[in-house]
Image (cartoon, rainbow, N blue to C red; front, side, top):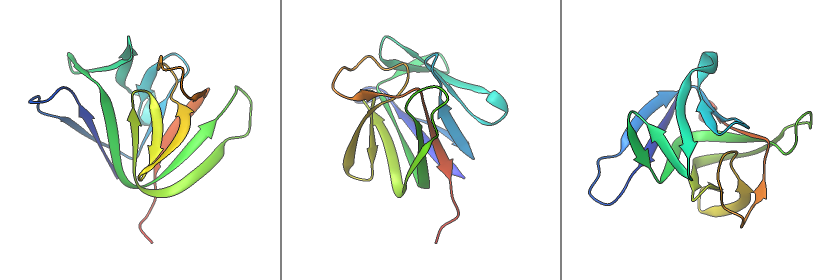
Length: 123
């Protein structure tokens, strides 16, 4: 099970959700199992539970599945102890992956069609 923590601004309490996986979709939504809408990217921020959040982190172990373009074969990265989306850019453990999550507005990273954080059993 993944622990996904959304962070707002200094002094704001983080928002925690648990899921087997989450998927960053091409329409800027973040979805969980059964295509459940978890959050929506609005103006570069994650809207969740009526609050806006700057970034999110996922405690794993987690594997990151990246689909660069529609109909491309996904590429798996990891496993990582944690994965993060900071300013719309993916990070695995302490390394920047230079990949932009769908819906993010940053221009400093390669765009992706879809990204998923997948729970894996600990080794």
